[in-house]
Length: 183
Image (cartoon, rainbow, N blue to C red; front, side):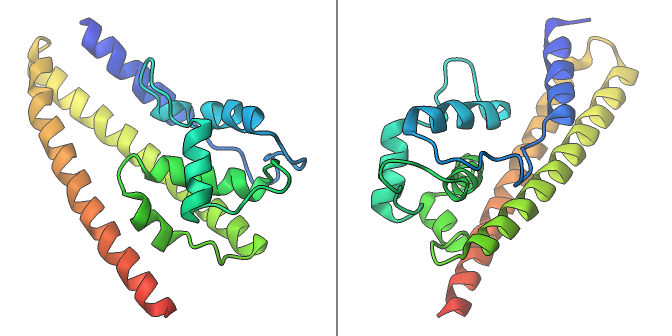
């Protein structure tokens, strides 16, 4: 088996096993910045490329300044902050911060943040499962054609990228509609 195939199968396995903590599993005690960074790195590990920082103290400070997340209380961050940061850091892989702000306004109550986070967690699990299934199907189809046909994944890669682009644009249109209906 080629090294590329092994890496891909490991990623599929990680994707299938990955799951965000439930709302109840998020820390109830407020955390300091370094604790938040440590947790976010753990929660968002599926997105991390080697030697890549998903979140830094300056990013969090900028999110506060931009009004993307609430201000900390005496330099401490609550589960509301963790929920916002988890959703923001996941979505920023594809969407701009201004689009994310439309989707996750600061005006949400704690209960609404909890509901948004729980819905996000469920949607992410579903999308990850569907993605793993599609990659497995493509892997099987390509492998059946020819063991050495791993290069056939380039066409699949283009299809995935185009699909991602279409859904990115759709997300932006929906976010604009959400913002327009809120006013």
